[in-house]
Length: 155
Length: 154
Image (tube, rainbow over all chains, first blue to last red; front, side):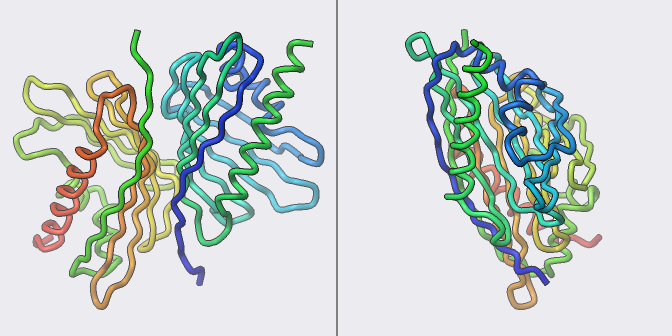
């Protein structure tokens, strides 16, 4: 029988992008753009990516890394303020194990000609399957991928 | 234009109930049992109530004082382990305004013949419309009502 444990934690990651809030927001609201930076990458196979970007709408991604187990991210859009704020709740699974449920707040603030993105994650990490440093590092990696996406579009 | 701000907070409430984890869990999973305690004050008018207790299922519960704003709870179940754990995310609306988004974890742990319930809420309170202290007070009242409902004859 699985020993049930929950670790609750919060972390914040900030990053400044050389793109307007409207453009950074669009990288979240446009399904094709989001798939590029959020799901795709070397070694990753995307089995499914579908997004319904509106309050109450669902985003589902299913993916694998090389020969690893299937992973799944079920997201619901909780709050959307165009060009200013997105709040999602999401749960992650690896194989049959549910590893976490989280709330993530993304705030888009003008900073000079660019945007300061503040991402705050409030998470419940389950049964020892994941930990906070790992999730924070993964989140930083995603925000790095978002930077590449924004530079790609400008080219 | 609305000034946008977000206040992130966490609170935890623990209660011990003189009932098995299975019975306390049922007070969350069974719509009839939940309706006995999960509601506004007696003088409130009841609005729409719907509940689909499964991962990905949604719940709505609306109500408010006569002539006052309608408070609406909209939840989606994120994780369920029968008799052990429930996690849902939810937002609260006051009329058409979204005032908060939260993640709630409820853990049911055996304690002697009873149950220790650990209720953790991680919240994002929006644009100055709500106060976390008020939410915590309201949650304590609900968990009191839950305790009372366990002693009612079914």
